[in-house]
Image (cartoon, rainbow, N blue to C red; front, top):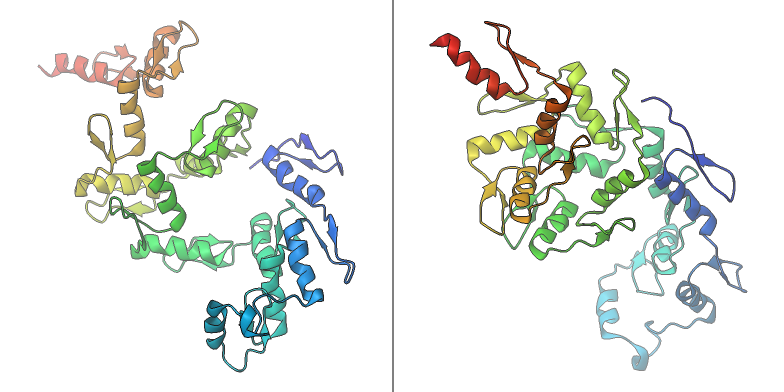
Length: 365
């Protein structure tokens, strides 16, 4: 990927970023003001409730401690019985006990909201150093966790565990509404919104709503015109990294994903998943208007336009609009005169493949 022009500058410190999203994350390091300072130990907090919670350690206000029957909480007593004798360091907030003081100190940050470990690359903060170290692998490009099946590497162990479920077929998160299962919890939560219709992520520019945060993030790049991912082979630029990765397979010809039913190979695992549905007959995407089902979500999206009448792809030459981009691409050949499909018998050329096939029947009869 070629170096990109850095045009988004922080007005606080002058640091420059190539993406608005990176600048937004960085700005948190400046807005991270700690307004509430403890006079006893000089510790500072951003939120008042965390400050007040912290002060209880100095005032020895222990509303749920074993200090007398009148202020005891039955649930706490039951909870404390579960702790073994060797766990002598107990949290004054919730009663949870630890066998080392250092573990207790880390745990207490949950209650105080303290996040002292800050990433100097993007400004994101963490309650524990181990989380910061894990996060920094994203910036460094370090990927120490490797899949034994296919060799793919990851910056975080959690992502490797999720990835391995592709090979094992494990899908532990099941939708109670329709029975569909997923390899990760976030996918289940996003899927459940297809039943509820919930779209909590709204674009501030145009008002379009999305069921997933990542969908909104990618959509917002349309408004700012950001295309940060460039192909080293041909110079084509993309808004999303995943599109660049998919595009690279055009140049390499690599097709690592093979169907175990018919042997057909694919450059993307998503293409294999869709292909397998030909064998299984699975059509998980159903139109709520007419009941027609599809094996791909994109096919359902296009189909829905037959009900709504939406035609988002307009011709810049004549203004004619289409429901599919592929139809617009075919239409544009009327204006450009492009005829990429040529008859091998007589040399006659056509703008559409289907027209060429139909024409060739003249020679076969």
